[in-house]
Image (tube, rainbow, N blue to C red):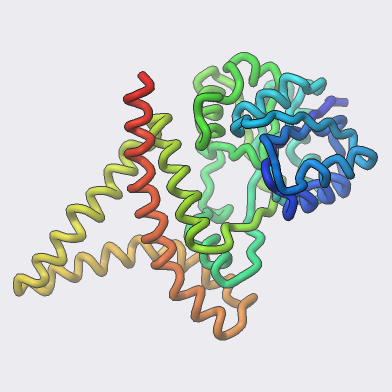
Length: 318
């Protein structure tokens, strides 16, 4: 039987870490060890984690000032398992999450990385709208191109070692760079959609802006998705203003292009949202429907603000 080490990093997760720890206790296939690295919590997270040391085979590492990559690498360096399972603080694991992630390893020795899926666990109308706006559904995933999030993935320890671990110079988007390194090295990936973790979307617009600003800053640091960011700048800073200007210059049909572009951008979020409205009250239904465009624009502005900061950091760091 495979020996599995589950790793995660935490910082100021006192209000949410218990969800993860309780779902670990409930796993149908439990890990042989659990290693948690705390990056310098000041809210009682460490005390909550220590309370579970008698319930789980848990090792706590205090890494004051560690970023996520440094924390993950420190945990894996201490791990005894040949297979590493990674997740994030604050998520809730499906009871069979680890079982489904490990099944391909037990059936095929050539598999190196198995990625699970993740679903929103919303607690308000805003969080329902946010999840629908930014998170793909399972039907939208191409299993052959899907890049694992480190909130739901299992990989061989030797693969981690061969590619040099997570990039410690990067504070966000580190799992994407790790994925690219593994793919470039020729390791074999498999997608296990039944292996699900549930996580709560950001609770308000300011937290969402901050999250996407940091993601885009990470893209700029790692030189990721140049084309996507270029299209966003062209859309907001060139095409949109041009269509508005033409509309004011007595060419009203040009404004139709602006509305068409908006409809295309919002079609997928609304398609995801409509089946979710049944869980909301009538007032919250209206709120969610109105929030989708605001969330979409806020996310785009956050990305446009964060990306050049990351690019400037990369240029200075050369």
